[in-house]
Image (cartoon, rainbow, N blue to C red; front, side, top):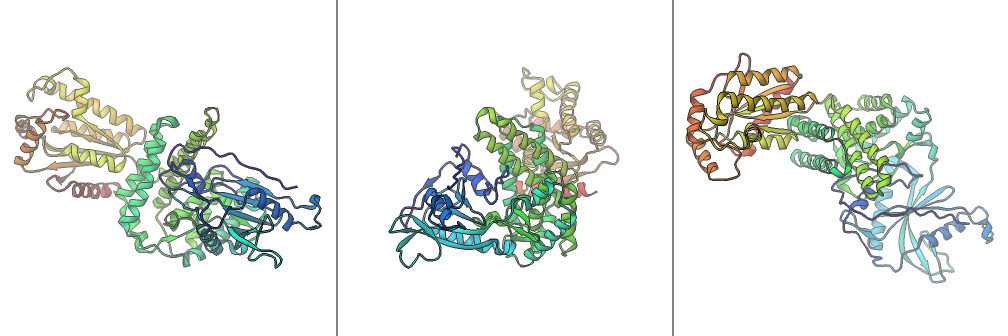
Length: 581
C-alpha cells in the first residue's frame, strides 16, 4: 500500500518581511525552510498550473513510485513499495526506501514564482547544482515528470519505448540519508564530538574558498542587514506576541548600535571578499555525517537570501548548537573554522551574528504562534522567548550600555539630533521638554526662572528624567538624555549615573550661530505641537547662565547647521571612539 500523510495548511495572516528559518524538526528532507515559513505569512499567494498541462497529483506520484521502487515488481498490489508523502507549503516530498523525490507546487508568491513548468524545471535544476558543492552525490538529478497518454504518470529522463507522454512537471531526485546521522540527532544522543565539527569546518573552509563573491558595497550590505534587524524588531514588538518589551528592545538595540558604531568591522568584511553566495540555511538538522559531512537544503530559490557574510553563516550554525545545548561544539566550530583559514573576525562580530540569527528564529516562532489556534500558541511563544534569551546572552560581549547626553542651548537643534540618534541606535530618547509637561501639565508658558522654569522646578524635571534613565541603564539598555544641561551640577549628576551603572558616557554639545537658534525658536513658536516652550528671551538668559563641564568631563561639539545625516555621522564617530576606550 502507498502511505500518504498530508500536513494541514494554515491560511497566512502576516507578510514575512525578511528571511526566515524553520522551528520544528521534521522527517528527512521535509523540514519547512525559509520559503515555507515565508509562505505562511505572504498575503498574496496565487497558483497557476502554467504551461505543460495538468500537474501530477500526489496520489499519482505516490502510486508510480510505489511500483517503480518496489524490490518485488510482480504487479501484485501487496508488493508495492511503501512511499511516505509529506506536504509543505511549497512542495510535495515523497520518501522511498533509498531515494527521495521532491516536486514543487505550482504556486506564486511575492518572494518566489513556481507557477509554470519551465520555472519549476529551472528551480529543480538550480537546487541540484547549488547543493552539490556541500552535498555531493546526495542530489542525483532534476528529472521530468511525464503524463502518459495511457494514463498515470512516470518520472525519468524518458518514457518507455511503448509509451508516449508530455512533461507536466519536474522533480528533484535525492539519495536518502539516514535521519539518525544529522548533527542534531548526534547532539541529542550525546554522540556529537569535536571531531565532527572540525570535519565540518574543514568542509566549509573548502566550500567558501570557491564560493562566488558578492559585488555588494559596504553601504548596500549594511543597509540590507539593518533592514532585517528592524523587521525583526517590528514583528517581535507586536503586542499580540506578549514578549517582554525590555528584552526585545535590548537585544535589537545591541545589534543596531553595533551596525552604527562598529562600521569598520563590516567594511573589513566587504573589502576582504567575505560576503559570498553561501548555503543560506546552515542548521544542525541539515548536516549529515555518513561518515563525512554532507550539508543539504541550500536556499536555491533566492540569491539574495544566500548572499551573506561567511561569519554570519558559521555563526548561525553555532547559535543553533548553543540552542540545543552544545555550546562547547559551537565554540569548537568557530575555532576550527578560524584555524583553517586566514579569516579572523573579531569576537564581537561572532556575537553580533549569533544574536541576529537568534532574533530571526524568534520572529519565525512568533509568526508561527500567530497562525495557530489560541490554545496552541504558548509552546511557540516559549520558543520565541528562548531564542530572545539566547540572543541576549550572546549579545553581552558587544558593548556595555551607553548614556548619551545631547545638550545645548534652546534652538541649537539638540532634540532633532537626539531623536534621530535614538532611532538609529534603537534606544530610548528621554527629553526634558516632555518630562516637564508630564510633571506640570496645567502650567502655561512661563518666563525663564518662573513657573515650571524656576530652579526648583528645573531640578525636579532633571531628577525625573534621570530616574527614567537610571531604570533603563539598570536593565542594560542604552539611552539618550536630551536637555540644556546648563549647570555643572546637572552634568555631574548624569556622570555619576553612568558611572554607577557601568555605562559608557558621551556628551554631545549642539552648536549653531545665535541668529540661526533665534530663527528656529521663532519658527517653533508658530507650531502648536512643539514640545518646547523656550522663547528668544529664554535663549538669552541661558547664554548668561551656562556653566562649564565638571572636571574630567569632555563634551564633543556637533555643528547643527550641517545636514542631519552629517550630524549623525559626527555623533557616531564620537560614540564609536567612546565605546573603544
